[in-house]
Length: 179
Ligand SMILES: [Fe+2]
Ligand SMILES: [Fe+2]
Image (cartoon, rainbow, N blue to C red; front, side, top):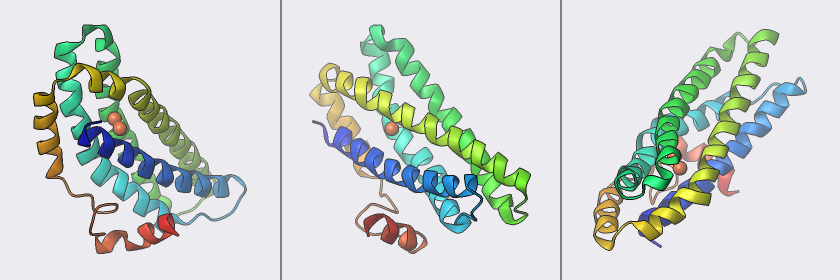
């Protein structure tokens, strides 16, 4: 397995943990409890400022090559590339609602819950299609030379939450996940 595919799968496992935490906070909203807004904001900050800016571009490096090499999955690859944009926009919208959550009205909680659930469902489904189909296809179709190029480009990216050094901003989130 290429280093990049292994790294992307690690990213997915970490994102899945964050989505589980986010989901449990949204369930708290549904049963009338006050969620941990600060924790949700930390998670969305990671997902919108790191995953959208670094995880998805790593995949786009792979997808751009797949588009040239395997026309049979062209439609699927194009859909995933478009979803990177849509997930980014949906994440920003949800993060915006979280920032406005200080008002904390019944309407704002319902809107927040619905927006969060859509975001979680779409991102889980997106990752599942990547792992189930696109990563295995890319592993077979792309050449060693292409993987070397991709691996080198990806190596330069440091993860502020799950990398070797956890940035101060993410200490609380990191502790919660690894407890
Ligand atoms: Fe993706
Ligand atoms: Fe992904």
